[in-house]
Amino acid sequence: MRRVTPDTIAVVDLAVCDRCGLCLPLCPPEAIHLELNILTVDDAACTGCEKCVGPCPVGALAMAPPVYA
Amino acid sequence: MPDVDVLVVGAGPAGAVAALCAKQAARELDVVLLERDMAVGSPVRCAEGVGDAGLREFANPDGADWVSRRITDVIFQAPDDTEVVLANSGLGWILDRTRFDAYLAAQAAAEGACVLVGAEATAMSRNGDGRWHVRVKQRGRADDVYRARVVIGADGVETMVGRWAGLDTRVPARDMESCAQYVLQGIDFNPDAIYLQFSDAIAPGGYAWIFPKGVGVANVGLGLVSLKSDGRNARQYLDAWVARRFPTGTRTGHTVGGVIVHTTIKKTYTDGVLVAGDAAHMINPLSGGGINNAMKAGRLAGCTAATAIRANDTSERRFSSYHKAWMDMLGEDHVTYYRIKQALEHMDDAFLNSLARTVNKIPPDKRTLGRVFAHALIRHPQLIPVAARFFV
Image 1 (cartoon, rainbow over the protein chains, first blue to last red):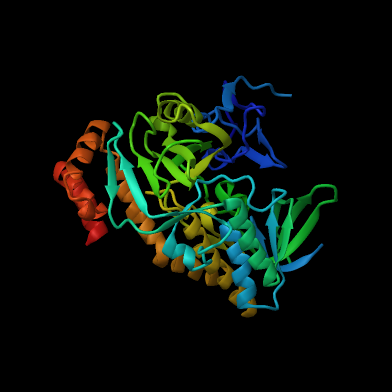
Image 2: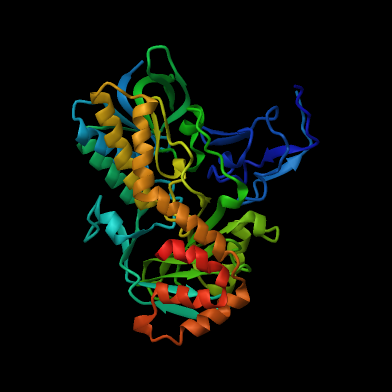
């Protein structure tokens, strides 16, 4: 089954992110990772569902068009 | 490649108590407690409130240096700031989590557990030798792979151990409270009371709190469900509340985080893995309280792991007893609290304001939570079936 590429995906502003980890269990495809104090969104796994954006207590997550390498 | 019997991931209250109890139950075991951050107990992501009875099962707060404040009163505040002082609401404590978590980890170390700070588990897989291989990063050295007979996931809201073990630890957005908190200095309130304010305008789907750390100093924060918010995030809601209530307070600390107000995950175990505390959503979904829950789960997990290793059986089948013991002890109560939480969502700000005024006509010494609830039932009959399950 081919995955549909979303128009926008989640991006994190690391200058704002507090590394609280709240968004990790909210992500249905488990595309958000927190390792060595850096939050990353797996571009290829993010489905663009936006479930992580509203709950971020500091507004560090936003939707943006993907830039695939 | 170190071989260990029990590897505990996360040195919060669940993990520290799990390590402690595993050692106490089976002294010959190698128990390692991993903490990702450079110091146990820091950063604090917590309002630090805890009930007296549950706490005393694990530590004596009288005169302890890890206590900030003894609490004797609970004050509910309606959306219009009408205060309702509750009688007989029970003793509580505001902890100093930095010191408290370090104290618990030190207890585990004193029993012979190995505590490693700045050590982050980054991956985990089951191997043919019947052990879990856990990759551990420590700054300034090559990765280690720990081979563990049992891994206890006490890694908080992120709950990576559960994820790696194939357990479903995801949370629907409606059951995630987004929280923000300041430490405020130089503010005026009763330092023997915690304050809880309920209002859709202040903290939709949750509540705002003042938890005293001393005279004039408090954790001032709120938790909300973002699906019910007007588009602002938790910190923006908090800024608005603080600007209104404590415009002259000085902010000397801030934190944010998530509180999972759900019920315990369907399965907290698998072959060689137990998940405890926030990582297993073992939080009172009504209050958002998790510290005592975490310690009780940690104790169960530590004892279960130790006795299982002694019996040479760390199978999923054996570990199902952990899940059942937790559900019998507190997990089923959390299901009830979750239903009450859902029912309380019907109360709007106008109702809460009028309820506060009605309840304040009850004499102060008889103003118990039960009576407050009874008045709410008269006005909101849809709560009755829920209340029946709770009180009967």
